[in-house]
Image (cartoon, rainbow, N blue to C red; front, side, top):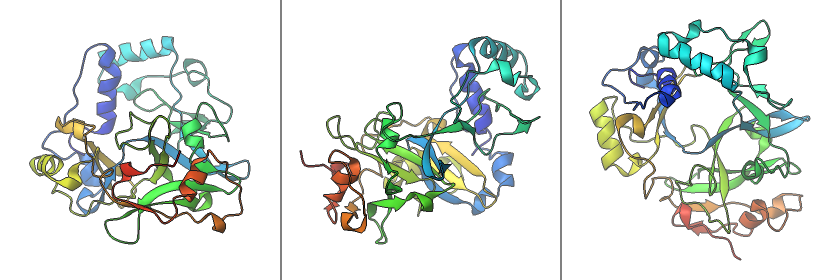
Length: 313
């Protein structure tokens, strides 16, 4: 959001093997934020998970996991030396065919990736953001796989209920999520900051990006934002993402303000939640150990806090 833009902060992290850096926001809004009209943007909670994408695969909607194509060791060393000696990493010349580690044949580049002569180009980090499809019963992406059922073409989604102040977990048609990005959260993702499930009974859910609009956001002053993060219940979040009218996303993490994350109690895990899953509405035989089966047994139940959800043994 502020004068350090995310391209620059990412570059600093990339160089951290040479010396430690601490990325902090300043008082000044960046040109990128001003050009995107951040003052009229919609502020939403930045949810702490791993990014996913829904698009077509094998003729049907599929969940895709984030997989960046990264440079091999030789190219990485060359890139780091170049970054350390110059200001503009865009001047670095990549050999796309030789400098990068192989990826699965099913890999696709993210939409924002630029191309040259038909080849995807790496970003300022030296990475090519992209996606791979999450196959049924995938071992590598088992937690991704647990939140989708391709026979029923559904995903388990956490979002706001129609009643204010209430969350809802329910199955959503994958076709409704086509071309959307979402965040996978849960027991085995990013050290589980929301306290979902347990090692014995892991719980994972998908959260559409932008699902949790911040109703009482701070003004765009650093001091007000710090006060909001530290003294407001709604501010117990990983960060803020401003969704601008031109599609631009401006992100600010608590760490950019020198604040801690994760927290013992977060805004998300303290809210009440209801389970809406009438399995009679679905012509599908859910496996007895699947999340879909477990949540269907809790249909209509309400919990005081998201992290209170438990399944019967």
